[in-house]
Image 1 (cartoon, one colour):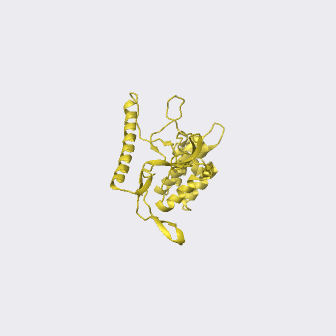
Image 2 (tube, rainbow, N blue to C red):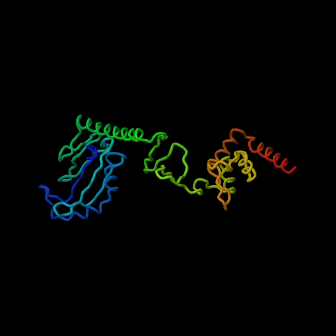
Image 3 (cartoon, rainbow, N blue to C red):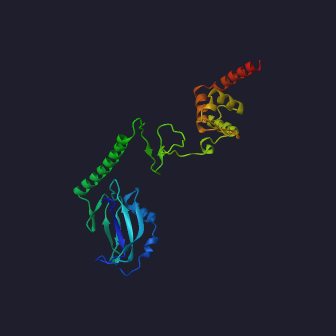
Length: 270
């Protein structure tokens, strides 16, 4: 069914389609994830969309198993067997077989099945393309068009252009992250992290961090440093990487920083 674009299996009906007197409510206790895992045992890793729900049929409740379609056909990677009378094994499907739904039966795929599967995928891609093109065509004059990717694990959008938080209605929403996540290192911690990244080739102190902070003009770069109104300075992983990269490119980086900023402090004192 998944290879054929999806479908529904109804539990609780007789052959003529009328509700069965048997109680199928226990089927609702089946975990769809367990069923999907059993399928993957024979078809390999993939995303299988399975949902169980109750639907009404002639004033009776039956259980529906909804199977979503897959974009790429599933092929059996392991042999499927089951036991018949006298303990003999019968093969349901073999390695390399691909099945499609033909009316009320699942049968080995044909050329027409493969063609229909490709046509469905092309149709889905065409709808996506046309939908995106329509957004561009209908965008107000002066709009900025950019390309964004959708995460596979969620529907969150990762912007490909710089963004900022605004109160304007209709603006693209941007996920807000706490400074404790974006800038997780206080001064003592950033010294420790940098020393770990340097791997014993050099050891810095908090004074070196202060010098690097001035050198990078980090207080004006929110990507490197965050300072709340009443709190202490917090440093980002980007700050750590910038310091470590500078040292790897120039082993005299910290020594030169100390000389440079000690001279500035001397001039200020004079």
